[in-house]
Image 1 (cartoon, rainbow, N blue to C red):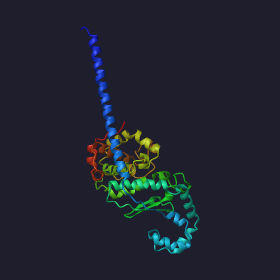
Image 2: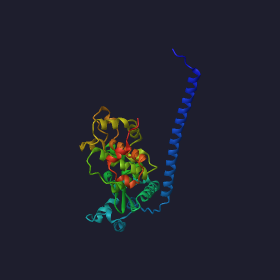
Image 3: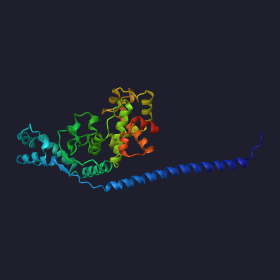
Image 4: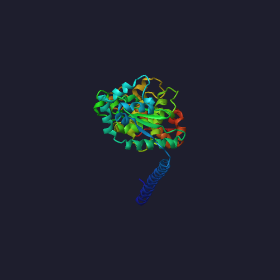
Length: 341
């Protein structure tokens, strides 16, 4: 047996420990510097956005109508002709002024929103961000109203108008929503209002993919959510995707398993429209065909698409408009997406 020089071994071990300590320290330092640099860049952009000139006009039609008399109807029709279909006589609107449900809607909206100051600030911030990234976009006039809880049309964005049905944002447990399915009522909260407006805007700037694969549609919605990362920097991820905090935690904890499920079953390039219903469309939960389905949040395909786009943009920084027109295949390939464990 050859003799061992313990002093030499000890020196070598000390050298290795020192070497690896330096490597680890260096990696941590590099990571910190990159993060610090990224934060400084984001702060600089936010400072520029804060200086964007913007005149946001908000018209509280809901309050004007609630405080109106029969004599005010002609003036309201003149100012808001798009809210008074021509086929309905004035007597319909006069009767609505004293309708008990209409009065109750107005009272509940007033309790929830008051002078609308917080929401106005959030909308102003959103439109400043939109104006920064899409300078050609004309800021619409905002009109708030009550809509008899037509939640499917709670936000309508046109070239010149943004209509917001405030009675669709009274809180998920509000008694007005007792007959509405729970997964829908969860989104009827004012914390999602700015996010819903951002979603309406995204439909104007993100082309829907002609490619019918599940991957292309996942990434399409991922682009929408990444757009919210830029337009709503102060919103939580849960607000952007319309999850509760518990649903967001579930998605984070199971991201690796979700991706593994999609890959192992070769779903990415599948064109079956049933996949939309299972993993992309609004629903009570995602449908894996497993016992845990009831525990899962809905629209997990959108969540995965979002993470793919985020990784892609971290590795391949590019102008936002360029991202929105980049094919899904290219985004997945260049992202080399590997979910968090």
